[in-house]
Image (cartoon, rainbow, N blue to C red; front, side, top):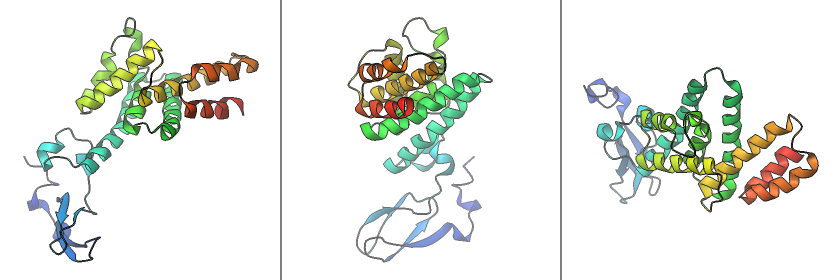
Amino acid sequence: MKCPGQDSRYWKQNAIFEVKCPKCNAEVEFFKDDTTRRCGKCGHKFLNPQLDFGCASYCKYAEQCIGTLSPELLAQKEDLLKDRVAIEMKRFFKQDFRKIGHARRTARYAEEIGRGENANPAVILTASYLHNVGWEHTAGAGDSPEAREILEKLGAREELTDEVMAILEHIRRGTPTDNADAATVQDACTIAMIEEELKTGSPAPSDLKSRIDNTLDTESGRKLAKKVLME
């Protein structure tokens, strides 16, 4: 069965409409499922401004349904993926609100650090939400089958899955890295961990600055840590 959203038999009158070309202002006709159209007057190719990505933004069968995804659609698909990973993380931890809260803080810190380090938001937020998923069942610094299973269930690209899993393994090893995405998530994890330690009276305030300077890998992470932990 063809997806009703893409089947013209289910379309209404507004499924075909005209849009002004952003370059020459000429009218360009769009069908609702057109990703892009080329202006017949000036030749400019532009995105459908009314395209509802809807299920195509997260459905793993989107490419078979509407054709090859544009870079813009792929970016939106992965942007939505992180939100769905957050939901799966909560389902995994169930009533363990401490771990859920830790993952959410880690993701929030990673997002802020990532802006300063030009990190990939989809990668760092996905890794942040998954960094504690399943590791208690893993010996040493190996792979987390549970984290990988979540990504596969949500239809994440193989390349993105590999990037996220590499970051998770790096965090388990705790070794320095020059990879911006891995360093961002590592620093976010460290800040969230120190924040929790401070609630129990450790580390001592006098040791805090030294620990921040010596354990965080990124300048953005050090700035954020001092703001969150010392002010």
